[in-house]
Amino acid sequence: MSHAITLERNAFGQLVFVAADGTRHLVNPVRSFPIAAPTEGIGLVNTDGEEVAWVERIADLPPAARELLEAELATREFMPVIQRIHSVSSFATPSTWEVDTDRGPTSLVLKGEEDIRRLVRPALLIADSRGIHFLIRDRYALDAHSKKMLDRFL
Image (cartoon, rainbow, N blue to C red; front, side, top):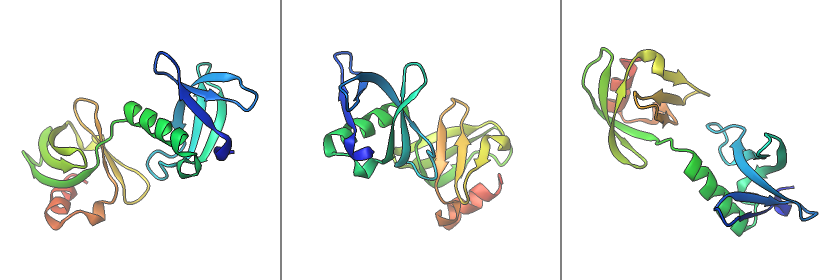
């Protein structure tokens, strides 16, 4: 069904799904598996919370629809991916972490070990004191220094 999906923006910049019969629905994309399979299984949900379309794989969409969907998802989601841990202020919490992410260097404050969630192995999700979620896709793929820092909290 993905190939038949038509998306556009209305005058207010909202995402609109145009059904095969021409019916228009304001929609929000919802990922089924945001960590394990972020480009697969995306529901387009209307303002009443009903799914009006299903995208099996983003890659199967026509380029214009794919660009709109990816842009909408990017504005709704902010989850930097940690690539390296430079330092932690303390091995007790709260602690300030200096990290490199896919969006550049930053610092985060870890309030407690319970703010590190284990996801589908080997991924981790770290919630900082501001409510920002940082993703580590594969904790075993980090460099030795980063793994050593992280292991103190696991």
